Length: 239
Image (cartoon, rainbow, N blue to C red; front, side, top):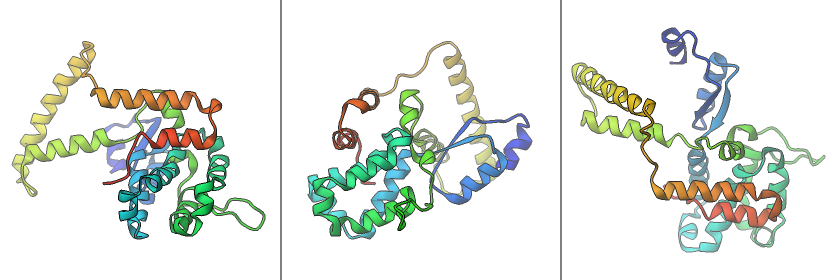
């Protein structure tokens, strides 16, 4: 697919590409666009952790126990910590009273988090390699630069286009006609954008983005636990 994109647009040279956490896709992107910076979608990071909660049999506890749910959400909240402070902040989180007292309960989630996102410590207290680099799932810089932290807009478009087709297996002719219709819609929206008529974001999303930005700006003035808790209040994990 990425080779096809380069064939269609030979000068295509994206600076940043946001992806789901799929190693195959990431490897393909890196191969075709080695200069592009990879960024993982925060929503899909949250989904990954939610699936581990389900796998550990802790789904009901997450739903019923508000304190447990808030503490668990501090793990993906590490994505909003400055990249060079993530490991230090994670270690401070593990030293908090709740994580110490509930070590056995949290161990399956923490083992997964270590192996996938942070890296387990070896005998020398150094972090081993892990599945996804911190630079990929960290979104602190995206907040300060007012850049998207998820690819939900793309999935939203996909759902909208699916509704236009209104069937799972349309004929090739209906598919082509739907593409042409969507192309015309995009052309109109593009002209509106050029004219400065950008559609306003929903107020709840604007408010949430502003809260997250304010918390991120306040990183140096908060304790690690208070900072992560502030971030954790602004999203949920359930699918």
